[in-house]
Picture 1 (tube, rainbow, N blue to C red):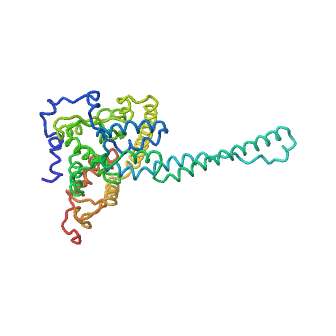
Picture 2 (picture 1 turned 120 degrees about the horizontal axis):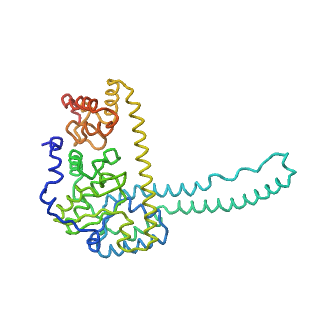
Picture 3 (picture 1 turned 90 degrees about the vertical axis):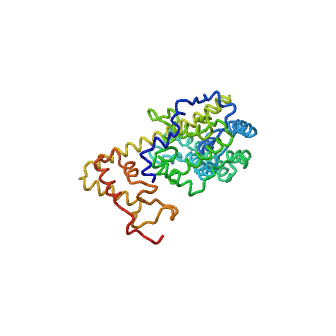
Length: 398
């Protein structure tokens, strides 16, 4: 049975143990945290770049205590994503520092008609003093920026992690790359989190899945509850209400229970972890400020995408049906190759190719891109045309 055919049994695949849905009792966070394992997401490793040195020392103390008790773990995928995103975070801070040099005082007023006025002389004297102070200020900015450039891989956050995160802290799932891709395809077809809503990301959603499988395997091997600490509020991880996270996806909670023989998964933010471990209030507040800033940025991004979608819907509605269909197909084939010009997915690395019955389904991609913009009838017509394409006459040069 192909993944596409299996999709009609999505509920059976997502919840294979129907009895357990009613008979399982999950632990409260307060009943788990003293013995649960702690697993960090990438965004949690990046969050301390918004904290001060005292906050970092407090974090270091907590993390070290958890590591000494064999309770804190970092998926290797998280470490790799941190390596990729760490410089972006530093560049953001560096740019913010340099922005302080924008808006220097304008040049002094040069109007001869004003030169004899006492008020103009007073202004010139004040301007001269301002230039001296500005010079000191901008030299300090340059010195700070120079220090940041010299950090290379030794910035305060990275240095802390280098001390703490030894090989025994890192975990990784046991799947091969090929098996990981197959599992991602299955979850796409069945819409099982995590990862299936991240098809548009550079990694196609493989990152969240790799982290999730690493978490599942250590939970299964140690038979322990896990607290997954993440700042991610996407619907891959959370059921949402009014644009905010409400409860973790039950598919995740139930899959963890099945894999760990009845243990409980909790998904929380860093500020909540600091709270339950009774860290200082100022550290909790620093985390909350950083989290709220990140959350607001995400909300603005979502709002911008919604506004763009509404604008696109208005433009699209003015087209004829034939023009709509042509545009939708053009978009599709600009992102996914026609099977007549492609190779089988398994024999070709990288890239996004449309393969009938393969990892990317025409309906999923068209609906994701055009739902709310094109009518269901137009979507169905386009999908039917795309799915009528078969492999006969396809390339054999793979």
